[in-house]
Length: 369
Image (cartoon, rainbow, N blue to C red; front, side, top):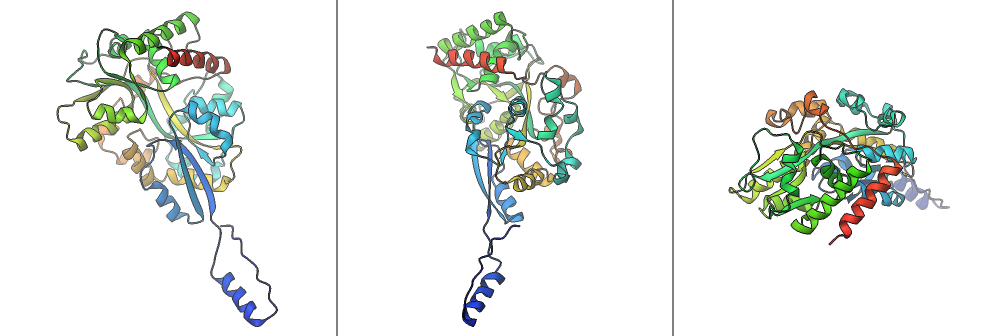
């Protein structure tokens, strides 16, 4: 811990003694550590536990709702940020994040699931191979449909994206639905509905996705949001919504808390949908690199990792924490996909051209009537 000890210079014995007392009291100035994370994405007492273990740090904790709302705020200066893998790849290319010192991350070395070393994080092989030099997985999830089985009926066992996403895009359904206010998830869902890649740059396919989203907005007036959709589903205000798998677990907890026994929330994962990894990394303009390393390593303590994945609902990349989970959770292929399910999913890719075109599409959707 760095201590700024105030030197007291005095001409008398009394002042010398006073100065000695100041030195002996161990007074110090705490180091600020600024964390930038998704909303509702950390256990309630994790920060307090970190500060108790590392009293030299004073944590400032701020939140964002999507990768795209996080990105323009990076100049504000953060020590640890937690974007998704496609944004991590973009930040590596743009020199927004710096390499991690793995010698300071013994918990990560010991407990990170080895499968994350083999993930193709982007179609740029050079950048994909560098991801774990710059970032470590925090939590991961899949993107599917959550629906109230008392209001929506789907064929048992279906993974057909055209059947599953039709719940959200059938303009004659009259259902109250939710859509993430997130460019990649919304466009990706529309592309997946047609059986296209969620990273498509084919203009015909993209125009179909655009038309589908505009028609949906005009006819069904979906509730847009992120965290608010969990409450709306749990309260019975929506019949169905796009959802990250972790949000489904949170919704189930909230339904139980509310005592809404007439709500039966189910989650289904379409073939070809997205799975994503939110990753801890350190911006190049961070002011407390050592504190950032301490924090990332702390988050991989098995007990801390377990508390966070149970509170947030998302899947943990920490092998020891996963072993401590309820088998009904760790054995659920929607939350912890097996090799067969993983092989049918895609991560989001990124490029300047893709980001520009997808932003144009999303802006058009949001501006439509």
